[in-house]
Length: 210
Image (tube, rainbow, N blue to C red; front, side, top):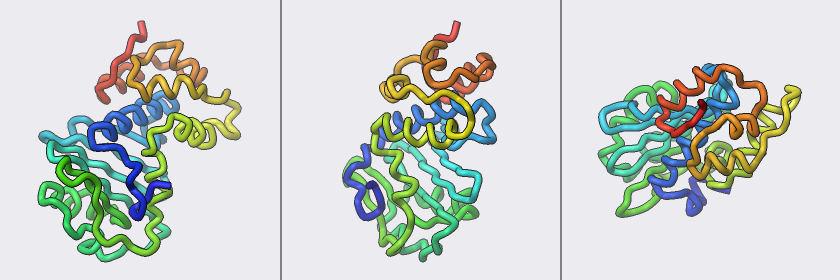
């Protein structure tokens, strides 16, 4: 299980960014109402910056910032005590200082932090003994089955929806263009194709919905 004490399975920054985009696309399909999405992706967060966000609606959040220098992950789980932020960010490259110590991260809180640079790969500071990082980082293992299993529990269980087709999820993981048949393999309840097209444009993901 990926955590701040076992992060060798995390992909490099470029691969993680592609994965984050795929997760946001899948959530745009599964949850047309942005307010209820778990994963989202903003390619225009700031100048030269892209932001991926996870929020569960119960207080837990994870933000991943992508810059030319690499990427940085800040996670917050409300059930865990916040450690000394200067310790969990010890050794943090200056390129990520504003992200980690500015807003919105400062107001959200941080229970764990990791960062990636091409020169040194993934690193972390001094993580707390218990930080719950595995509860959020598991989705970054790059396996379509991981999202499929999670989404079938989060979006489908007790909803009456059909189960999500794992092969369709795998296609999105591979970066294939979103088509209506692909969407229908994921959910048969989406009917606002115009909104989906807008979402995909904002994410910067290819689609052919005509």
